[in-house]
Image (cartoon, rainbow, N blue to C red; front, side):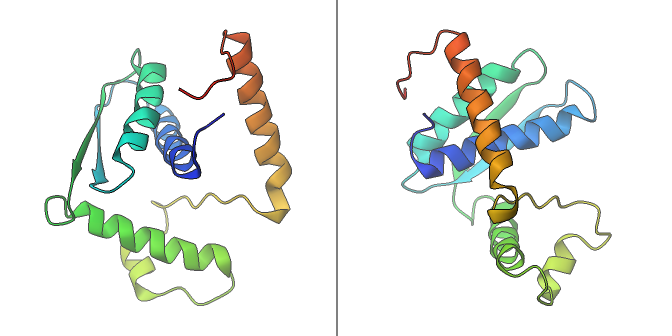
Length: 142
């Protein structure tokens, strides 16, 4: 239904960010940067799906480049690395780099599905699938 795991996670992440921005109002332009890698085609498909769903609310774009081209990609790697540590063991001491990314502890939202809330994930995916079928989706991954 969502393609490969990378595509599903990327689409979910972009959609989540757009939804968070919607909490602050409509109309802000958003530019996403994605590292050049083997998943560019998958990222473009997922991004295209999200863009079609929000084009009436905001303009979004995606660019591909290296960490040398887009320094924020380096920060994204640190965020992913540190977030992974926290998800795996929430009680462990957080590294100083985590604090540097969010010194006021009000900028990062860490979303995680695991044993404790897997029913929420399944329910959300099921509702999304039903919505796709209701809109005429034929069940094939595009």
